[in-house]
Length: 172
Image (cartoon, rainbow, N blue to C red; front, side):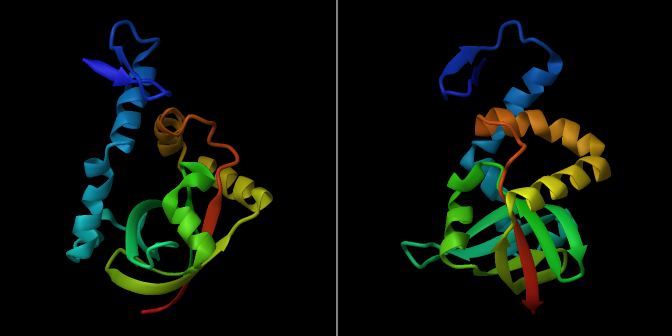
């Protein structure tokens, strides 16, 4: 069995520094596997997104070049109010959904039993993002410990400083 390293080349699974690094590597590979990360989209599009509860959402955004609707599922990092949701771009500013929101902040989300709710995206400043991440670490310490290494391995950079987006729900 082989794992992908940060450069994308394979290396044998021999001795791994720790079980945690092995798990991070496997989860990192899963995060880069299109079929795995796109599977929840099928559930959301078939009105079964409620299975994920309120910690995950599907974002429908418009392709900046194609003008075609695109979909991505993201973890909810914070709910500052009933009509606001904060999500993070684990792959930084190069993530396609993030770049699409820069070009067109009007989008839609499906979360829980709510489907295709109109939202307006606002990019958070570095300071706002750091504050949100600090609150997330305190509110979800187990998830933070599990996901931090996997995200850093998959993205190839530290989690601190990742861009975040505030999604303001406008209505169903």
